[in-house]
Image 1 (cartoon, rainbow, N blue to C red):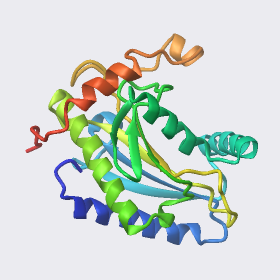
Image 2: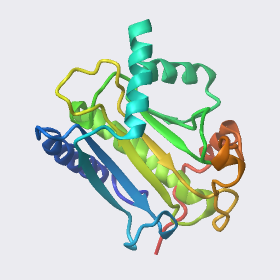
Image 3: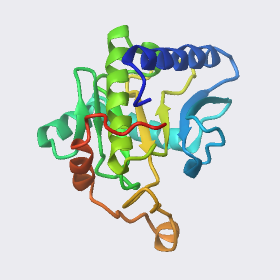
Image 4: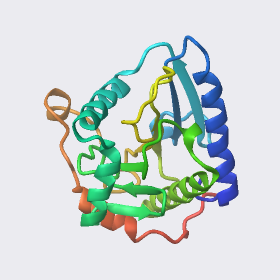
Length: 230
């Protein structure tokens, strides 16, 4: 993705949109997961990054938790949780990686992975299907920025798992939901040092090896493309 022109990235986004919308229309489908694995370290069997769409008749665990949290917040505040959260992050600016008029990429304060990134829309939006053409272009720009900075960080083709979280495909309105994507990269200090969840992290809770602010600062400096995979 870092080496693709923006119109090509838009085509990828539109493909994800169209295919997930088709699946969501099936009566027995309640959720559609769009995700991409990049790199052998993330179990990618193909030499090139590739994405997949999985659909299922029940909501997966992470979506159940996010739905409950966003619904509770919306009922109390009459405002989407992630929309308000992005506004607060823009006030502080310490964890903002890149932003345009429609999307923001940041290292969230709850990040578990060292260079974890959240990409969120600026308005309530249940799914990729709800994005306008202008928003798709804006999302393509953010994705190119994030993945370029990843590749430049250790000057390698940076591995990660990325996925969109869309609202349930249950035919109901979801004013509480804000379309967003999570980037989970495994690398810690270099191209060869990997973050592992072991010991205390598996039995109690994850530990942060690097603060979100430091991760953001390091990624901010890498906007120009200088690494290219051959």
